[in-house]
Length: 381
Image 1 (cartoon, rainbow, N blue to C red):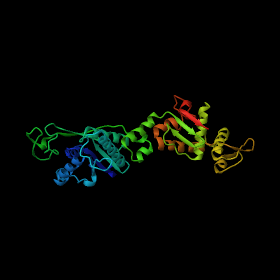
Image 2: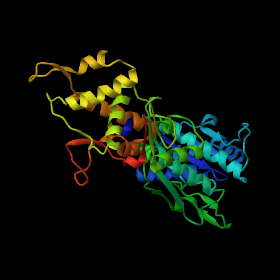
Image 3: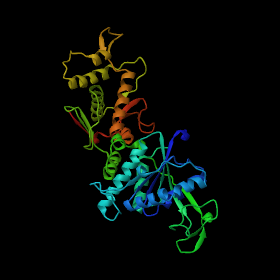
Image 4: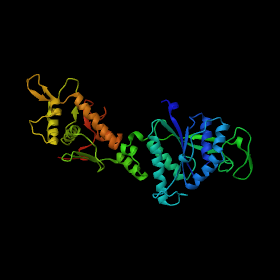
């Protein structure tokens, strides 16, 4: 992955100590990590006021960049996101449970939006703000983070931490007041950036979680659904497949008929369907599939359409026309059905409810099967 082509964004949550932004920039500089092209900050109304007054109006951010010969990142009022309630009123602090919910929703939606751009890489800092702010931004990155994204925390020596005069170790002597009131040299401050490994769950998430703005609680519920899913309903009259009562998988008539065939075989305790080779036709499966397909299409036994005609083959033994499934037909159905499950419910559900070959330890590699048990399936015919 070529990170040099990415737009690098530092994402920070900040409360009353905007110093964490320049301290994090110093740590990034010291470690030789990709320096941010842009800074995005989530803060309270008072925190945003302090950020603007110090980093921008007093020029502290510009001074840091000059001291360490770094380009000035994009940073202004459009990059400072003030926490607000449901009515759009700016929040001065996080004191009540409902305010905590608003904060969680805003942080999760901001990270979701930023990670939707594949040309961006994020460096997310846990430093600053209330502990719950750090928790939510770290949790959000675990949900939505990509391989190029980084999570970190900045560690500052006691004499300098929380000192209103300290912003970063200067490359020259500079006398400041420590938080205990004694004179110290900013140049001698020890500031370390600790990179934090995190579990990336993005590829396992359902597409609605990745694409749609949702509350924090909704994101958690929809993500947990993929891990707790244990009951599949195949409703043939409605042409509907749903998992644990959630929104249905969207399948076309051909793919639905094929999945119905797989579900019917599961309930009949048949061992899936064979993996065919090029040039091979399975006439038994062809008849089974057409029985399902014609019922969905409300076709008479002698009626035909493009799909039916595509399965017709002249039997070399009897010389009669028969209908057989082929390797390419089965694999096309498998890919499209699994993609539909992945889109609606995530990759984890594809392993359980999609069409797959069993592992060498648990089954016959020469067959495609549904991994769920018959008691986990309700087939409404």
